Length: 213
Image (cartoon, rainbow, N blue to C red):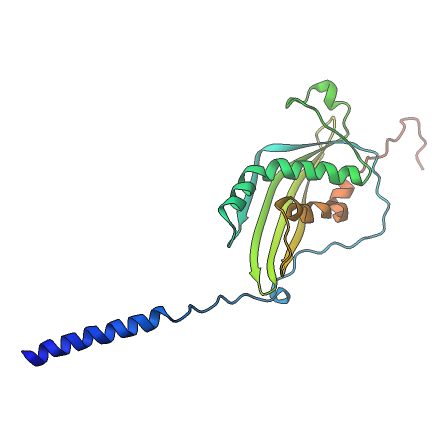
């Protein structure tokens, strides 16, 4: 009986020692891929074309617009900003990007687009979807984004073009960026997306009296 009791005490003592040693061992550090190992996003090449910017535009959001995010290692405050401010921020950035390219963008204070106001416009640009995914890398963090917009000709509304604009935002080392600047790294690629620029061009009006060649 004594030997059994002694064995139990010794076993408990050894367990406590090993447990103490285990608690003192640092957890293994997470390993992240290098930026060079992250798959590339679609690239845009400048074709050198001088795009037509005569269209008067309006920017809005579809009724079923969606925005999704996968943002590991992000603070609750950051997630809250993304969920609450993404749609309005995206629409404002689209307007600013179009204006910087030379388009006239109308902004109406009320939500209802009357017929009179609509007849002023040539192109309607709707925010449909936005995806943002964060990948932790050895150098910092990589945000890959996809913005989906729909362009409608006005006033007929019979010509619709859906365009996807990809973007990547990097935060390297001790660098910091606010969320608006991260989203802007995607929206600014609108100027490089040829299908979007084509959709914003005004179709030439052919006179009924013009001769046919």
